[in-house]
Length: 247
Image 1 (tube, helix red, strand yellow):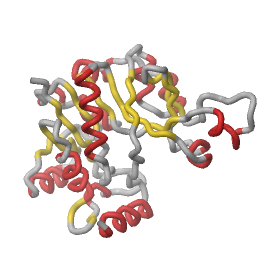
Image 2 (tube, helix red, strand yellow; image 1 turned 30 degrees about the vertical axis):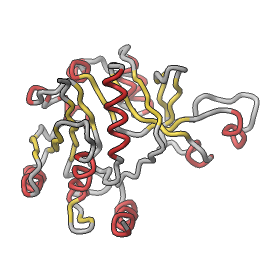
Image 3 (cartoon, one colour; image 1 turned 90 degrees about the horizontal axis):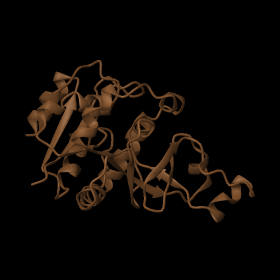
């Protein structure tokens, strides 16, 4: 039986909005909303919070969840998960960000199902970009992909460059795809993350998925209609509170 684990990295001292993972949303901490929604995915065997904080771990235990303490020095969610692989009896690992309280269980199910039907090194969801603001926004990561769905490159710039038209017309002549920051890894691939060479492309774009691409691993993509609603600022938090309280 293929074992699928979803790991939710949850760092307490986030830079832009400290302690956001414990922020109250409709009577629950933000990270519990993430955990609840991930747990609804029917083809995930285990959900674990990976955190650098004993306070977060205690909160997770309080609602009956499982948390594993990690080294505070971990620089990213991927590094945090890779550091605890020895404690995970998993074949396939999903990295679901700890600031995504509206993450869609159906999207996670589709990722797992796609990987099970055609195992690959890494897999991630993408959505069609439909407005020029997202296309021009460097915070919306773009991905160029092959006919078979394999990711060719990730960038904060609009890719590909449509030479013969002004950018205002690009969406009329070319399909553009936005990347959602959920990753699925074969355990063996993730185990090699820390040992991969420093990636000039990763450093230039500040996108850690480029570290895998530059090392020769392949990224498969799965199309989704879900659009990420992450909590990075107080404004984001208030927006999510309104959305959840309206449900």
